[in-house]
Amino acid sequence: MRELELPDVQDVMLEYRKIKLLYRSALKEIGTKLEILNDEFKLVHQYNPIEHIESRLKTDESITRKLIRKGKEITVENIQKYIDDIAGVRVICSFTPDIYRIVDMISSQDDIEVLKTKDYMLNPKVNGYRSYHLIVRVPIFLSDRVVPTKVEIQIRTVAMDFWASLEHKIYYKYEGNTPEYIKKELKECADLVTFLDSKMLAINEEVRSIREENKE
Ligand code: GTP
Ligand code: MG
Image (cartoon, rainbow, N blue to C red; front, side, top):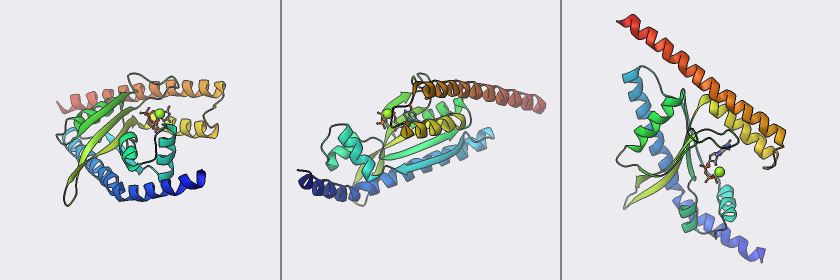
């Protein structure tokens, strides 16, 4: 049976390669939009809300695994329909209010359609994970048609990103069976990150108000 299924999957992935251009282009579109917003924000408010931006295309292997995990047949239609994070952009901000500023600025653009949002800032996951996730659709203009294309945007602070990258590594190391005491320690670190983010924000506000006073 397996020998019969395998070439099918390869055919599908070959076909999928033709639409990969869309996702690659969507990453560029979103990346440019974010850079423009950051530059404009810098002009108006004298600081960059975005520390840096990372983007990636999901690997073919990871796409196939995700469809199997979701119990879906491997077809190009299913890839487009069920995988929201083929194109993924991560926006790393300085302070928590910057996250919502970016969310509002991106969501209100006319050509952006917000399909889904998950506010793990307001509702952190039990493990302590905090970030804001958006699934958006952006139009990609080809020679003869326009194709709305999905992008997953994850927005978080530098401190949250530091936590998430370590948590992700540990999760993979234990193949999802992280021992309870490590989970507990990671949760404690997540709480420290929350504290750190609010403390750093308070210091920043303080410094800003002193600067404003001196201007007057
Ligand atoms: P997948 O996890 O991608 O299947 O999608 P989902 O429907 O669960 O969406 P969700 O928005 O919860 O997560 C999307 C992505 O956010 C993940 O693929 C990770 O990159 C990141 N993420 C979500 N939860 C965690 C977490 O607990 N820890 C870390 N490090 N990253 C997370
Ligand atoms: Mg998940």
